Amino acid sequence: MNAIKSIYDNANRELGKEDLQWFNAVITSKSKRIVFLVACVNTEVVGFILAYRNNDGAYIENIAVHEEYRNTGIGRLLISEAEKTLIKHGAKTIYLSVKNWNIRALNFYLRQGYAVRGVVLLMSVEPERFKEKEFNESYFVMDVSASRVKTHINRPLTSWSNLVDEVDKYIYRKLYRDERALIVKKNRSIKAIVTYSVNHELIVDSLTLSSYSALEALEAALTALRNLALSRGLKNIEIPVDASKKKLVMFLEDLGFKVDEVEYLLQKDVIK
Image (cartoon, rainbow, N blue to C red):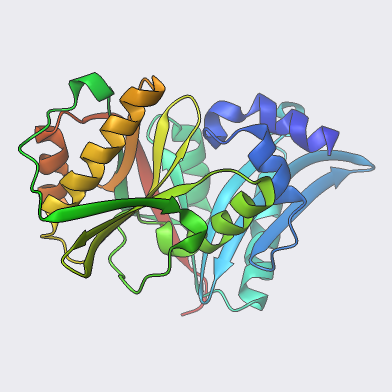
């Protein structure tokens, strides 16, 4: 465990924003959706890979190799063994994401047979710069524990939501982290669900609409998040958005959101 933590710390910028407590909970989790493998040279742990599986899809969350052992084939070995394990459990397509500045990693995945499927924009706004519009009072916003959310709305606007949400919920329960969900209703119909977590900033973990035209409901949710961020003194609100959803991107830009970072979403069909 100490070796894994050390590799994770050294590769933190490449791996993302998850804190070590969350990562430790993933490693020690007993969720059957998680695949976690380590590579060893003799008795030394020199790399690891973490993936989630959900039905016939899988998502590689992290892969890292100790800096002294890079370019030795360990990364290829890790991803090959992870793919075999995921296929054995029914995966037909495997997804992963790469930051746009991480060209070394992008080239690595392309050599392993992955192809760019899309682009994810990490859009953010400072709460005080959020351009609030006239609020439609016909929408009602409830803030509840994310563990209570049960929905059949199936239009996720974050590309990996349908792969990792169930695992994340398990981890959040294990950590007793207060992941929350905003449920936006009009009359008795659910129009939007936004799950979020709070660290030093407010991160939207998943965002779901009843239809792609339900932007008024999204605005109601974002206004509630802006008010929450202001009340807690948070400096930033971040939302991951599929770049192909032009209407949504333009809508967020009108509210003051800007693109901070870009990720490439890659996929590999492992079973034809």
